[in-house]
Length: 229
Image (tube, rainbow, N blue to C red):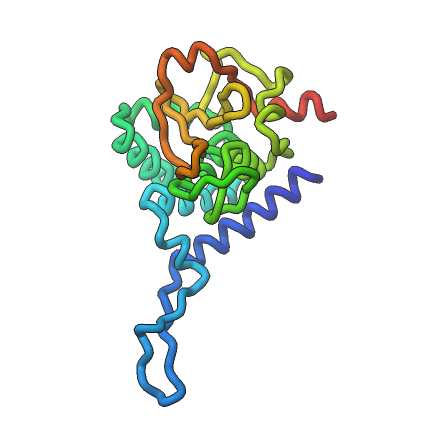
């Protein structure tokens, strides 16, 4: 029931986000009847429309996959490809390889990746998981995987729990990787990640170094159900 409830909340949220994207800004009118465009009001979707283009494209793809159990839906695949091509261009990755990596991932992993991408450029703040406002690293994981319907723990240490761990060669897009108290979402190819770095920065992409890759652990949040039964 928790999974169903989370899914339904996700449908409502992404539907609302899609609606925001189609709403134009409204202008206030002064008491004298003159146009007061200099004091135009921001509609609720304004914050969404100011997101990076990759994030806006991810919101659209997310709104499609959240409405269907079919990850092969043609309309969704076209929308998702726009997102993966944008990520590949930004990170100088092979777009065909990245698209294949996302296609191999289960539906919940795809949702987690897209959800994380909606948060690009959101400022870092420790202890926060306030979408489109403030995030820390584990808050980003919590948001992404809760959107995917998984009852995700909030703390980084718990998100790297040994009972969810997988070998690096078995990791797929949407899996979590990290060490200590810092966690990241794997984008499915090479060592490309999205994370919320420490130090008051923003949610952003990262290519992990080979040195760090040799130290980190990898977890598959889908395995969380195995030890929460």
